Image (cartoon, rainbow, N blue to C red; front, side, top):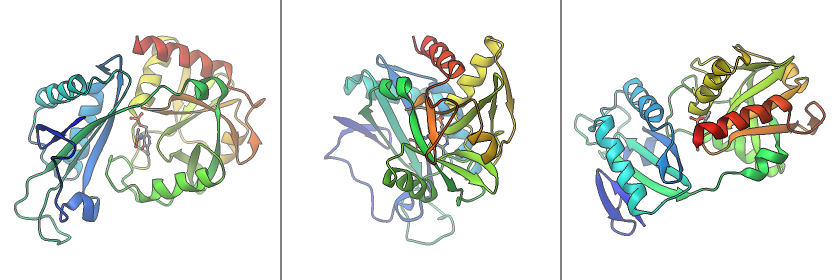
Length: 276
Ligand code: PDD
């Protein structure tokens, strides 16, 4: 199994990252997770666009063009013989004596590896349950940064209650999942939080909205409340690994009749077609 360290393919045991890497000490870096289906990178361009955008927002200069990066990632998938799974990549501000402000000179640390991850077919068919948690994160959730402690604490609470996802809210407004975007369906219309600083603009979310445009499914990128969520006809979450996963129960309360909804199933079918 190989991984990429600063542009080179190395054995997992060969590479190391310094103890004073700013990703390790400050979470000073960004990441992306790209899906791989049948050995092919899915929506890679969209993920790299977001990566460069996150970099810009943190004044990080990625030393590769999107074409160079894509070539490296494809090579990684090939040498690791990955069929269905993910690529995880991250860039940090590099290694320097520990000071909060940016170091005067540092080279970004770039790491990428692959993992086999099956599509969660069982979840697609049966749905999952979720809990509601206070969104305690910072105000730049639009940046895909390594600072994930708020998300980690939210997901841990869900796990402790035997649930798959934690749905976060600021006051009455539902923002997003701990590692996903949230959609509700009411009267055959989709609602999802607008892509502001309070959520990550998910690539899967974008694919779903494109599907809606192509198939005349009504949607609005508008905020909705906890009450709207609990009384929705359908609820689902979206992410690179979870794709379109129905949420059938929130805080022990059934959504609709407690089974994956018809529109959710329809969007799953259209999503399948995107992958093929
Ligand atoms: N999570 N919101 C948050 C907070 C996320 O961490 C993610 C993705 C999403 C969905 O984005 P996308 O559709 O681009 O995957 C929304 C990734 C997969 C992760 O941290 O593993």
